[in-house]
Length: 389
View 1 (tube, one colour):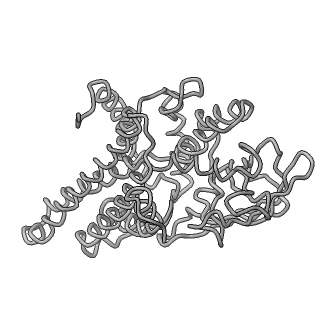
View 2 (cartoon, one colour):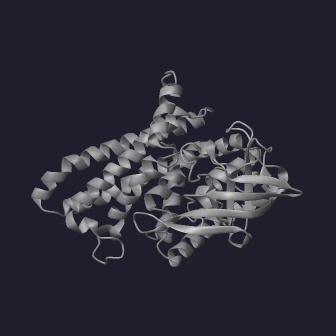
View 3 (spheres, one colour):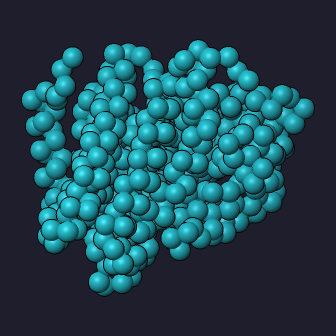
């Protein structure tokens, strides 16, 4: 097995890295941007990517992508993760999730309408999946959609809608047949121009880091054209599960953690001897562990490049990386001492206050995107062949 990238991929890496270095990094410019200015920076960043055709490198060329190989995609993800490339929801939700789903399940009209607006960076998507009573058990969702002529009328509530306060589009799972078994009777809908849709209300949910990242969304007689349904009525669960298959890569996370560990190494070198003695072996352990995570991610890429679909292997990566991230940022806060508690608004904060904020945001990582308990069940049944129950 060749444990390195080819000359072609390394040449691409240098090109991507040079672009990222020239275009800077906006601290906090992710979905949980602290200011409108940071969000505008992320929009402009995506516009520059669109000019190069780098918004959706994995997509086929006919849909506005580069037709990049799996390994080329890994290069993009690694470099974007390492340099903290900001996003608005365009790449994460648009390119990574709804776009590939439309390529597989959408009709020609939907592909022509939505895909170009993703690769141009115009549309910013959010996801309407979880509900107050349907999180890990997503199939228990109750948001109701009733057919009325050429429209569906939607009533209900979604929660934990990441970036919903800045998005203009939403993909959403709704129940269209309440009498069917819970995994059936669900449909997949696209909701346009959500900021101006009558009856649709978005309210902020402030997280532990005091950031506005999540939202709750209320639907009161919201009318959505029937043509916005993706796939067949009552078969949306299978469309939605296709979408989730695109959520598990992990390479970008490992690269981001590598950048954090490098900063901690530099900080420790600049400290006194007693401090180095206290923290260096634990820091070394985390560097080794993160390298393990990197190769677990490479394994996913290898499986995909071989024409297979990772299943329990992706669950392994999700558990490993989420729990390792919690350890890294917990360690980082402690290594920095009292100053490790300074938030980004404090001018004296080491690393721009990234460490305590990253630690707080790492806490729910073992819960969202499928809790780690569920991932362990997937590994047990699909990976180890153990019986259910």
